[in-house]
Every structure is written in C-alpha cells, then in structure tokens.
Image 1: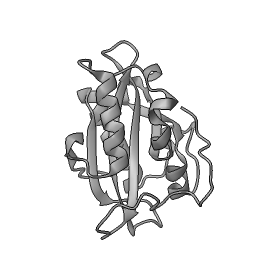
Image 2 (image 1 turned 180 degrees about the vertical axis):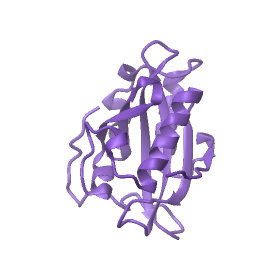
Image 3 (image 1 turned 180 degrees about the horizontal axis):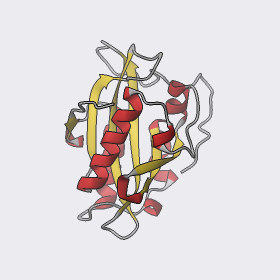
Image 4 (image 1 turned 90 degrees about the vertical axis):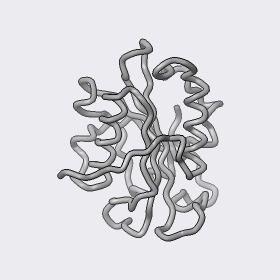
Length: 177
C-alpha cells in the first residue's frame, strides 16, 4: 500500500496533547538531535501519557516494535499492540501512515507531524487525528526509539475535545513510561 502523507512541522500542531509533548521534547533535546529515553520521566509526561506511545527502532528504521500505547490510544484501537512489530499490524491506512511517519523521523533524525487527517482506522473512519513523532537516541546521533502523541476527535468538529476517544470516566492509565 502506498499512501501520500502530508508531513508538517511540529510547530504547526493544533492538538493540545501533541503540541504539549513536542514542547517537552524540545526542552529535553536542547541543541541535540534527540534526548535520551531515560530523560523522559513519568513526572514530565504524566498528564499526556494516555495519548502517548513509544516504539523501538529496528534495523535503523526497517521496522518498529511497539512498546506501549496510552489508554486513549488503546481504547481508540480497541486493543493493545504492545510488543508487536509494526510490520505485523494490519495493512491499513492507519498503520501505513504510522510507518511512513516513523521512517521519516528516523531517516531525517528530526520530529515530524501530520494532521488533522482522517484516522484511517477500520471502524473509526468518522474520527480524525493529529500525530507527532519524536526521536530518542541513546548516543545523541542514532535514533533508537520513538515517542509520540496522537489526539483524536470527531471529523468536522470545530474543537478538539479532550476526551474524544478516551477511556470511560474513572479509568486509570495503566501504561507506565
């Protein structure tokens, strides 16, 4: 499947959650290409963790292993993908877009964003989303992990509701960074 993905600078993000995570990442990265994974602490991202995900970079971007997804992402998808290779996920627009964004981030060693775009997730075509993908590096040069935030809202909404695809009231965030 070949898709056209309209990349944009994370500076153009409109979603509150992706924009906030990008601001944290920028503060941690400073003048480096990317911060180290251990610099991203739960205390820094606690309020964003339901919209966050992380993945390992396999063979310099040939594939990606999904490490975790926050509760809002899991509820949107209807299942957890933690531990799966991205190449083993369904061949849908949603996952192909993820692969393109992740590969771009690794190849160019820089953050990238897209959206708002239709979600491309089967059964969730009435949602749109905005995504930011941020590189992490163990040595300051090679991108070894990625983190990002995905925010969803109903297509055509004039605002991006905080709980658009989120867990039921009272649900706890189970994923830990």
